[in-house]
Length: 321
Image (cartoon, rainbow, N blue to C red; front, side, top):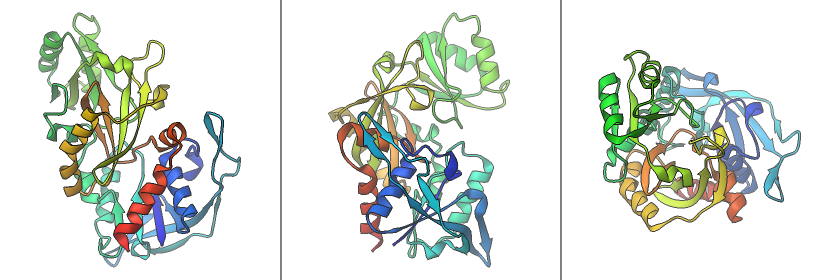
């Protein structure tokens, strides 16, 4: 089979961390072809989605103690060629956020791919519908008290009532721009002004969960089923546990409450074609639903001696044959 990965420039990926690389390695290990492209290499020709695609050969990472070690030259690119995306059996859309207007244009190009010929993971229409912050609002029984607004007074009232809250930009990733808001902070008005661009853009405000100090759990779902988890723990005075801001990773289990949350979201995820998803869970509450390029595979594999990438590729093969 032929697998196409739509990624950021491959030279910028971190082979020992990026889930995209883990899945590409697993694709190769299982005997399938690995092709890559970038969003700016996609086109529509005669009503059909095309791309400049390059075959790639991976030199897989190796485990060295408590980390993955990669060779200096960890990939080799073959000669690229312009071809229809439907020449591929499966496409994995793995472009990192933010979800900008050009990103949405790309999902509309991917909409032109015939799903009978080629499976797109995640489904383009699902990516269009599922803002990673706002999508959690579909599952009110699973999330902490949450508001979305650009109104300064609404935010101030919420913070006053809750005493502490977390502000999240709706287009952020990796913990970028997330702020801890506390009633009585003399900078509170300024923080709200800057984050909402002086009342022009809405933000998400969630009740602060003290359990965040114990970790922000990432649970990986494949077709609605949890297949692995990792805990991300804040370090030092940082309140965010995201790996991108230095959070420490630790082995964890999928709890009964985690499974309950997975059951709550599973049917909607399947309906929207969101097959590969990362749930963020703090203190038994769902805080985000990551659908664009969920990470965590490398850390889960390392801590649990498993291969989630292989599970993902084997599942894709099973539903496309």
